[in-house]
Length: 509
Image (cartoon, rainbow, N blue to C red; front, side, top):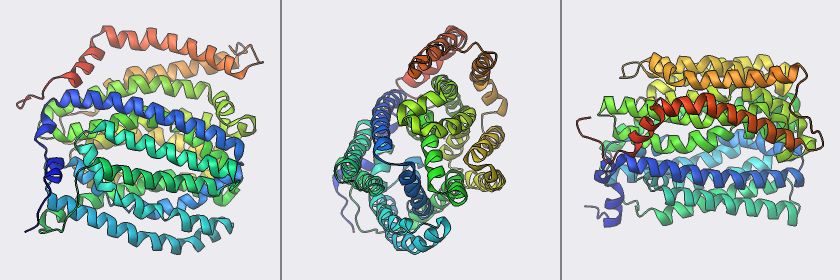
């Protein structure tokens, strides 16, 4: 019989998860938002500094190597972290089994990634990619070693610990990257050094802050069904990788590292609202919805409230990025990166749909329907890749247009697919999002029309950021009057917020 440490038993306990669930989720959302804001500020400072220390070619090279390592690394977790987060009950044997599977797969995938280095070198026709792949592959087992500890921090809603580790590891990684680029002139190797440092410090921090420790597995029975769920979820993550990396591969293959450098920098800014708002909210909503999966009415109401609150905050960011794309790129990266501004402007037209597509994933994952998410992601990835392949003849801007088109098509299809056999209906999601979609289309259209007829608000050309501030101020004022105020005074916003601040979740709700 295996002795289970008392601290590990406590870390696996789920009784406390349904007590004050609303308050836990609300506090988690606030902590996640604040932590993510600090993380983004750190990343912005890091990117702005590195963009001035390095060349687009350096970023393109690392993106090429990362395409190969991410291709293999997406399987390192096998979706087993989400099993620990999503399951209503987990036991020590199951989590220990998942830990050892994670670790074994991570160490097996590292040499497999090394074997892909010659393929990546041949594909991108650049010998520098070979050694970058070898080094970046080391991060795969390092990350796998902390996967279950991180999952338990999320499951137990220990948001301060979780985001403290995320921020601390990022700061350490950025410090190493800047030191390597500035002090020792390691060029593209400084980006690789930052990646490895972030992974290592993150895993060490997760082990320190999570009291759970793996032991010998006495019974693998429960782990088998958990692994089945994880494989399906991992499959959907792999196809998501195809969505997120196939554009990088095609741009790098067709146009080289310089063009890819412009594209990846634009894409990183494009991901800003998802990173700042949707990511933190999703990280707290998925555990909450998973706890409510046996209470379908409460689950559906919580889901729609989360959707409206997420869109209320994200829509304003989407509009800001879309109307100020060129100015944002020049402020963050400098004038030499103006081509990234054009790409960002195109990508940003799909921001609101890219964010809204995540809501379908929330529903399927929280209900344990990972296989359905996998099936949908297969078809969407194949279609998107085919369109990328057609659009690459127009370079990075053509690929950005292809991303935009597919995002507007796939989002409503995923909503329809995810709401089958649930308390939610497709029209519920359309109704919840209509105010925000209308605001996005109306305000973006208004500013583009204003500029096209020669009445641009950027009359002070001496300071680019002056135009950005003025346009943004006008937009925020209009958004507040025509979107936030109706949402607030109709009682919808307070009702949605109240749902998260409920002291307890009624058992019969």
